[in-house]
Image (cartoon, rainbow, N blue to C red; front, side, top):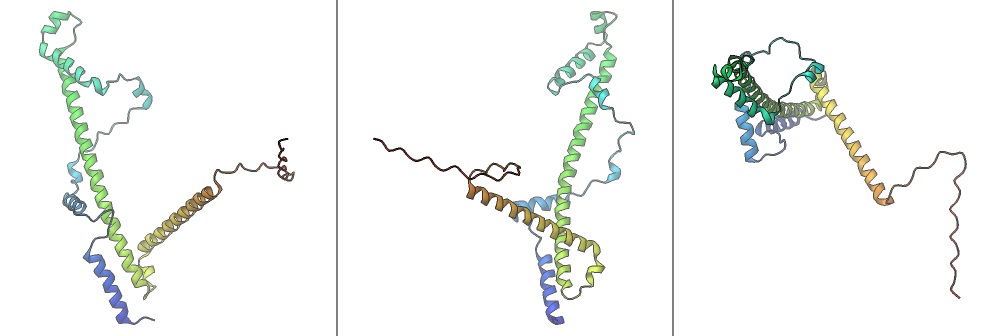
Length: 227
């Protein structure tokens, strides 16, 4: 059994490794580290400051199919037409008669159109922020737990009972081992298939299911000599 002093020395090396430098992800270049540092400073937005969506049932797909559509490429033209009616004011009725569109209603629609698009743009920006921030968070969480597992595995060499004390961490160890084994098996199978394909050239046609024995190949016809 290893001495306590040797155990402590090895444990200190593992801990020192995890504390001294972050685990590598895809790159340790300055630009990568600089971007990560900036994003770590960007704290997640307080949940209370993000309004909840109104409690409305989603519009059924069949109903959406029956709704009039506005192509993005024609959005500006529609907005300009609304604005034109608003700017004409009472003149619209004088020009177009009793069935003229209401300039007041056009103004309401214009405000609604702009408000919905502004909100949609803001939400899209927030969604992009949270997606990127989650990527940074996932990177840090994964790196932290990888280092924690390294320390635990090093200590298990001297105290196997620690596995029972950290069942969730051990579950990650087991999952990682299974994933690595599965990946190696896949890679081995792919290499084997590639080697067979390279050795055999074109793939052979599969044999037909039959009880009859496969006949031997026909002998080559004798060559005819020219007279």
